[in-house]
Length: 209
Image (cartoon, rainbow, N blue to C red; front, side, top):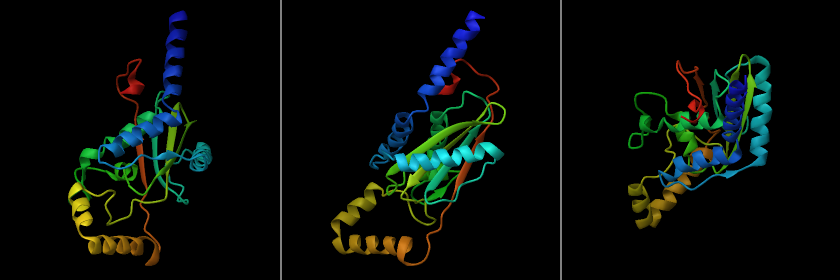
């Protein structure tokens, strides 16, 4: 019994340690730094929205999006040790599936990842709540909203160099992007969800994998 309680307390401490705002931010900003995108900042306002929506989903356990004022990634882990950090790592692991040159997903879903590294989304808020049989629901919201169809989440070094060397080209691109997002009709939002089953084999530190 003592050994069981020690293991339970260890897992509880490990789980709590991977659901802090610092964990959410660090993992997002690590992915952004890899493609030379600036860091995000934590927003209590956005986090409150994420928490309220996560609590709402506890009632019906539905893997659906809020379609609210922010962009959104959601994930569900069907085992109690699934943490917020685990969810963010799953999204970040989509990086190899995103081809920046063609701006397309190749070989699988990559929309969670592109939202994580979208340059104009600079405020983050996330929440995690338990729901149904030992499952966990994680939601992260991003402000300003982004992940627009037909636009790239960040500039490559090549495009940055070209734009820096031609002022007229830079002004044209900025004007066109602003028009696409705000002046020429309502932006198109694309939402993504993710579900993960409990691993067939687990270890004490499986939540950190």
